[in-house]
Length: 162
Image (cartoon, rainbow, N blue to C red; front, side, top):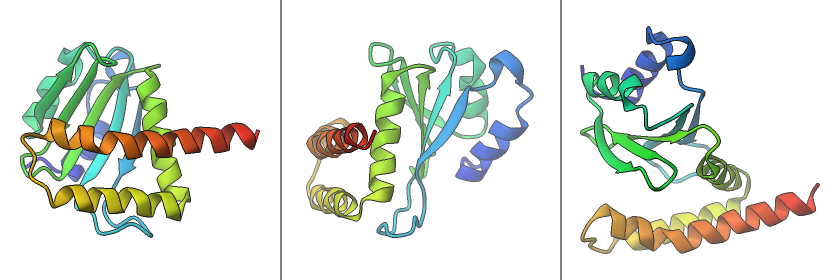
């Protein structure tokens, strides 16, 4: 089976692993053709399990539908990242309760609700896309400053509106 957003959603919703083996939550971080966003061919999901290091609960099934494990960071929120061979879908996996989940969702929600920050992020990504990168870690590190600025702005706005 070719790995795709559809194959991931089909597996996730029809998986025989129910109850304790089922993930706690799946959130879409980015997807194709979001209103107000530049055309994006990448779909990104944040998926959290009770304990993400228990890879036996999901790794074989994701590999069976064509996803590749690309990142394993046991010292960073037990983070795992899978992607399709076409690189058009990324699935980030964290343990439930990880502060990284909240950070990702705050950033996503800010981009959805604030056109100026969305434009700043898009401009940064377009500029970075013109450069050559030794690997994706270098590219990700180059985006960190704008992501942290936008996330901090979102947190500050949230705390003043309470």
